[in-house]
Image (cartoon, rainbow, N blue to C red; front, top):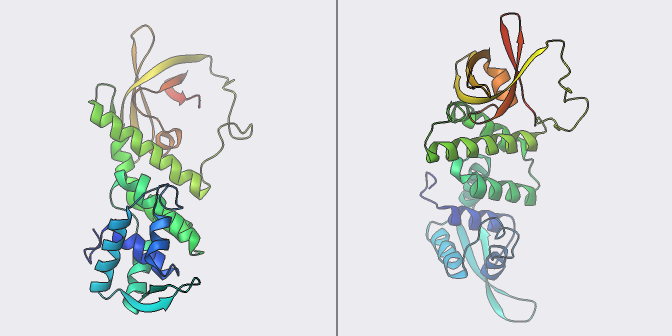
Length: 250
């Protein structure tokens, strides 16, 4: 819910009206299963009309009599000044919960595109808001419970999505970005990550080798996040003198 008590349905309908969709049937079509918004998040026609009624009662939209092209009377919808303000705030506001990335964030991005608004400001705000959460959720061990693993993998997916949308995620297939792992260090050991703990500047990555031996690598947190390392990943431990570096196949 927004500070005004608006639900996702309320905000989506209000935004469509603000963009110029001026009658309920057209809004319902956009929110149907095969509609532009409905393919991301759908809303039935009865709930669409209920949301429109609620917006009118809050004086965020107005209703006026109009006549369709076919000569039938219909109610035309238009946003009030306050309705436009609420829409702008909602479209610029990052989502709070990671679980809403699949629905509310994608809907906002689609609505911003329809309105001719750049996606970058919202994506950057979302990235800043989620950064501490990403650090927390990508820590853990292979012994975590199923729900912890689900949250970790969901966080990694959302982080990659934001990076991709902002153009900060390098193509792993690019020959300029991906080394072929032919390093001067000869001690390259295949291993599985068993635990990751992120600190403010350094991260500790615990590994297990095929023979059961265990290693610990201390690398910068920036490097750990850049490699998207998490428990269960296959990596290559590169040992040079007393230092242990990590490499990971995409």
